[in-house]
Image (cartoon, rainbow, N blue to C red; front, side):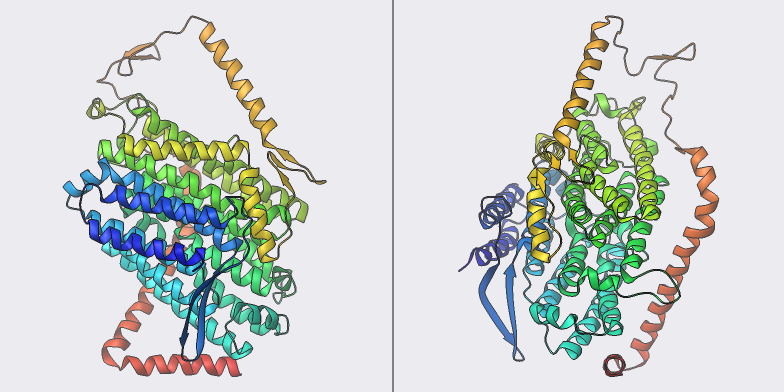
Length: 621
């Protein structure tokens, strides 16, 4: 029995334990301990955490219709699995104490929550361990249904929206697999990779395009992103932290596996788009850039903290895909590192917002403010998280974004670079709105007695905050894993050191950058406190504009935040992007209604047979 088998068995036992423990007070803590055991197993796989992982095969093999299913782990699988299990452990830890008690009191089932979370982890590990395309599809479906279960705990309506997208994506992936089998005669990764070099461009367009669409739906790439925001925002807080951290990245994992490892980015460069100057790789890059820009600008318009973060989760996936399709050592390292970085700050941001909801009962940014003095640790977690999300030093988000920016400049892609900068500016504006409307300004009277979140919620946030800062200070801790992934999928391997990279085209040493920043903050702090002229004023007794402002006077500017900016981009948003969204929704509604009518008035098997015949005819022709 290999370490991979032990990991999968331990993950299965986590599901059983969650079922057995039910709604007991120790249920969350018990499951958290088992997640920690899974993390130890992964650590042992990697050569004690250095990412030096050779291929590990499972001893279990299954035969279905004379087709062999098998499972294996390489550096790519390990990297995503480590993030998955770590995110689940921290989400479970966060939910185990006060949050679980409040959730039970509100009528929620801790048993269902823990089981849904454990099933997500199990499904993701099965997906990441897939040894060929059929086991990849099985893992994909396990993840889809486990995600549906977790989303349904928050809102069945939004979970059903997700399910429609997931089923469409599964059908598209199945069609791509069928085409692959017809062209190659096998679904084994090695044989598909060998045969891909000899396939004509038309076949690669069909196979690669269908795979990207199917996996892109899960990743919420434009224009397949409409399901994610409301679904994630309605999910119970710790579940949203887990899903926001890693769930959509399963789509990125599959895209890397198919486009980079099996087909190859160099092949995409050889596939021009008729009547344009673009190649297939350029098309993907622009899809990634639009995925950065539009959701980020949409986040600016949100007044619910959870929806704001969910929109950013879509946009940040664009940076990951963009870096990977650039495919040099800097860009691919930036894209892969951003998977880790985003998981850390997205999880801590959702946790911080959940802590605020736990204490105040609302995530409406127009009904909050001034909570800094009541929840200082939650404020610190959000502050560190938004700096990481905005891609500013000294946090880890700066490093991965810098690598992507630098690769675009070297690649000679100024318009793509401009798109990422626009996305970053929009991110900075919206995350400032998030922290200002939540923690800064004047405290509302109804929140005067609010206290900090329980220790069970604070400790995971502080641990994640430490990870965000530490991996920003010493990015080499993550770049070692990233370099192993690059080698495993055939990308140029980045030369790195503890503080960053050394490159003839420009290096980065975060140890120096962060040290200078910290020294500057220390000097500014000494100057501020040595002046002796400041005095503390009660938060509800302010003075501004020549008038004393007591608690009776509202002085918190939060409602209709950024009115000038919204006045400028509002007409454009309504006349272009919003209409595009409404058109896509209307089209999907029409197709759903049409499919529903066919299902009620006809025999379903006939239409399934018709679809298969059409696909086979397309492949053969």
